Image (cartoon, rainbow, N blue to C red):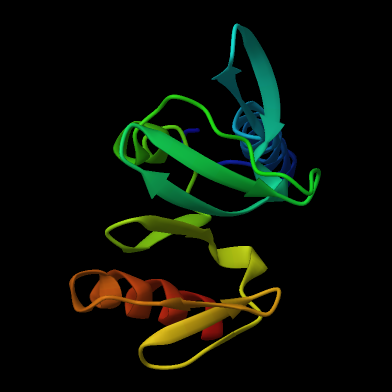
Length: 133
């Protein structure tokens, strides 16, 4: 956009940005994970937390009582997740939007308490500050 620009040009540019943001959000709304011999679509917004089990992970979701357990490392899965997810210790990742309460060294999601390790506390504090301001 070149100066001087009219209000209509400005409005069109803002609308383009809004549309692009919505498309980015839609693209990041789900992932596919391999369970047994099939690919299962998993909505990212429904994941509450993830636990590591060596070469497998347990993905706890609001959609199911039983967790998904794909053959995948925590590191590999974390690369597929969006900014709503935060690793809080060596073996757990939580959905920041699902946190019910938190303290200095712990947080709670649906009455389950998680500990935040010293290594990951700085990143947690930064994320917490950005949301509480």
